[in-house]
Image 1 (cartoon, helix red, strand yellow):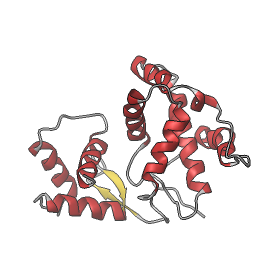
Image 2: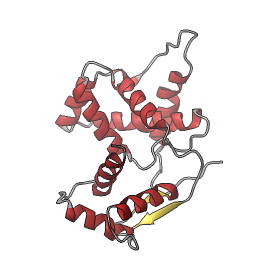
Image 3: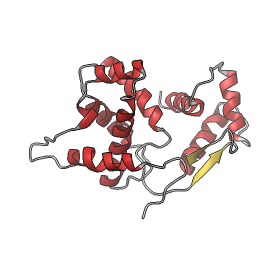
Length: 196
């Protein structure tokens, strides 16, 4: 039985998306063909336009991401969470970048490609989470990711006794602006540098 982590609470709507929208994608026919439904059929250009307008329809894309992710985690062996540290908002940002480059593909295909890209670095089993920072300004990471972040910051010369303070010092030293999901942007930058 899988337990919920504080940062990974899915709404009933997301679960319904997983059942109604995404599961058919795992039931491909003998030729590997399957039907994608909902906003997964929209083009990347439509998705980018919806995001630029700040339309309420963007919540449908978020629901599709959550539903697809839930189904992906359920249907793949040794997959507790395909996203090691990424939140839905971060996945949305990565999809916007991809869709800007390939506006003609559909949103579902873009999400599937991104998911396959991150698959090898997935969290394979239910592991504890650790808080980075305090209740007011902190966030949770799976323990292996916490250790990776700690090692990355130490390699950059930061004292990681207080990991949140080290992360904020990294932000200041690199003159990075404040952002809505600041910790996600910092993690994206640090882990992207690691993979170069």
